[in-house]
Length: 178
Ligand code: NI
Image (cartoon, rainbow, N blue to C red; front, side):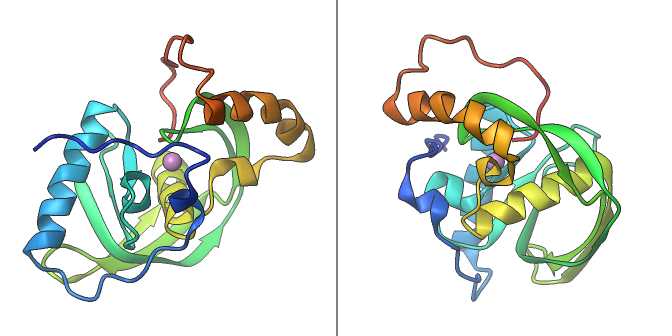
C-alpha cells in the first residue's frame, strides 16, 4: 500500500469539518492501515484523515512508546483541564513549529476499529496529540492557535509553504507533534 500524499496548508480540505464515520467496515480498516503507513513514512506521531483528503472523523497515532499504532473513530474530548505549553508542529505545515498553550489533560472517548467504545485519559505529549488531531477533524490547523505575535511572524513562512517556496529548506529534525 503506497502511502498517501499529505495535504499541506492552503489545501481547502484542511479547513473543512469532517463527517462522522457511520459504519466501521473493511474500507475504514484499510484506510487506517494506509494512514498508519503514511504516518510512519512521513514520519509523524499522528495523522488525521483530512490530512490525506478524507473527510472522516478518525485519526491514527504512535507515540513510539511500544503500544502503537492506534486508531480512534469519531473521537470527542469530553473533559479537559490544566495548561501546558509545548512546541508543536504539523505534517501539513511542514518545517515550522511554535510554542502553543493548550489544556494539559484531556479525556477522549470514541470507538476502536471493532466498534467498541474506548476512553483515554491523556496528558502532556499524548494529550497534546489528541487535541491536535481532533482540531484537524474540525478543520482547524495549528496556525489558528498562534498568538498575535506568532501569527505575524508566521505569515511569510506560511505563505512560502502555500506557494511551494519552502522546498529548498532541510526538513525539521525536531521531534514535534505532527
Ligand atoms: Ni497536524
